[in-house]
Image (cartoon, rainbow, N blue to C red):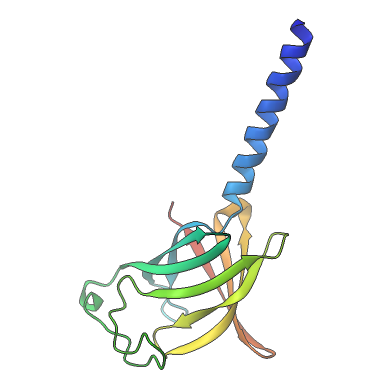
Length: 146
């Protein structure tokens, strides 16, 4: 009887460890986005999940002078909307492996919308964000804040 409890205990521990590892390798969370040119932190984007679909909002603008900026370059329903709390990533789904894709991401600096692919790196401490149109793409590496 005692051996049975030990086996159940170890099975529960393994389940908890594997769930924790999965959570770390998920794109869900708060990420710091850095400017490609200046390498300065720009914003924090919160990626959340609802019904198996990921979306991302600009939760915090790190430059105090940009707090009231609007997306003047946007061409869809986000045109002239405040950038703070703007949804910039939509409809992203798991591919069943370690990548998420199928949605789109907005570059609020130029108003362009790209298809997107997300891939956690370094045990979930970083996130490769690939925006692409046809064969052309650009990668960014976001760093997990929480």
